[in-house]
Amino acid sequence: MLTLDLHGKIAVVTGATGELGRTIARTLAECGADVAIHYHQNEAQAQLLENEISLLGVRALMVAADVTQGESVQTMADRIFDRLGVPDIIVANAVAQIHPWSPVLEESPEDYRSQFESCVMQSVYLAKTFLPQMMGRGGGRYIAINTECSIEAAPSSSAYVAGKRGLDGLMRTLAKEVGASGVTVNQVAPGWMISDRERQNPIDDAAYRATVPLRRRGHDQDIANTVAFLASDLASFMTGAFLPVAGGRVMVGI
Image (cartoon, rainbow, N blue to C red; front, side, top):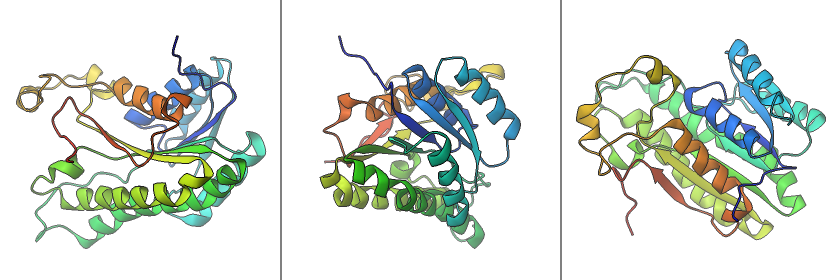
């Protein structure tokens, strides 16, 4: 029987208090992993999640950091090293506040900078901080959350798409650079997923669903399941992958 067994593993989930992040963190814990719950400002949600995960019989640690700042990431890492140990799994999920989308000629330069810092520089800092120890130990998992939007490239989405496209280039290069050490680097690209917020306040999504081959929207759990798979030994020979979890709405070219 195939199982997603992460017992004895330590995971770090950035943006763990967000709509997708909390489900990812919870799922990794349900698979047996100890989880470092990163948050930036939502301390109350981080505390709730830490309490919930602790009840699963694994270790949970809430850690605050601004992932767009290298020193802040290092401070977070030092706390994780001290309290949990060297992580086996990094999930780069945090993203800057989504700004109103505008055409390129109207988009604020600051919007491009914030997306670059949260998408690209976050993963640069996380890689520099955590990967040397993982490489020295002979293996690990780095999983970045991308988006279907980076393939779709819809009008007015340029700042968000530019940040996520930059992340894609970084992850593909990193996969080649660290592969010999046994560290895998992969991306999960969600579509427009249903999460806690929308389960509480449903909206009319008929127009979007009509563009999805499966004619429905996925759930946050679908993303968490894919992350857990990539974090497990079942995905030990997968690296450099960009996996859309979007019901076929976007497809990676060959």
